[in-house]
Image (tube, rainbow, N blue to C red; front, side):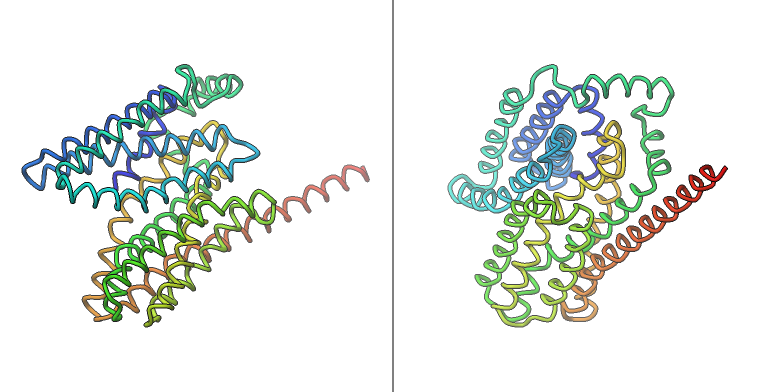
Length: 371
């Protein structure tokens, strides 16, 4: 939840203090959060140390990097996004294994303390990557931003951030889409292993299925740039395509009963999960001007933080009521179907409006010619 809700904080800090200071602060936050978590004596202490400090710190660091990549890469932004998000996928595969080994030798307190110390390297890396005076906006963008600020349109307040939804309606569309996606994603992700065991596979086979999902996710994040780099498809259309494919593969997981079929469809689902995730910031960038991208991307993540909470609970509640995971996973797949249909209709309406506007402009030019 904190990963999404802290998005506006990351965008505000990166705009005011630059990338270097923002990543350093975020790195210190999640490193200290893990170290403090290793010393807690009550469970509720973790809500402050791990959920608040660590969660917010991770969000600040990662969202700042997303903003940096999308504002500073032009020709190869799809490749840069793919590499950035692939690092997250790689971490999802490696870190749990590292934590299990550390826990075996040092216990959970010692493993958290060591992971917190290792995370402090992000502070050093941030000072090496970013110049002290490096800010998100170029000189031309700064001048433009100053002009806009004097016109009271680009101030970094909650009210002015919310006005972005009114000024750029397609941002609302993408925000609603990510809300549905988070419900479907969390519901599927949380219950994938439990559903596999329910269908009769062993615990070891269930872990292999989940690992295949993670490997597919990583492969998708790496490979997503290939069709974009060669111009075979746009980010928006690739995103829509992934929504419909995931609807089919997730539904296939719901009805599959054997280990090979569960393994195959989980791998394919993870692959297309990895492909669509890096497209989200790129699409937001298309919907808004460059100077407000950081604010727009940050504010668009906030509702997703709340909806991500409910996906796992709803899927679990459906299982408790019905007694199997078919309807539960169909519900998760339906969220992706809704997004695919919604974005397809929006694209058709946009193209029809563009054609109508073009025809009216041609008619006006013909009238001027006759006159």
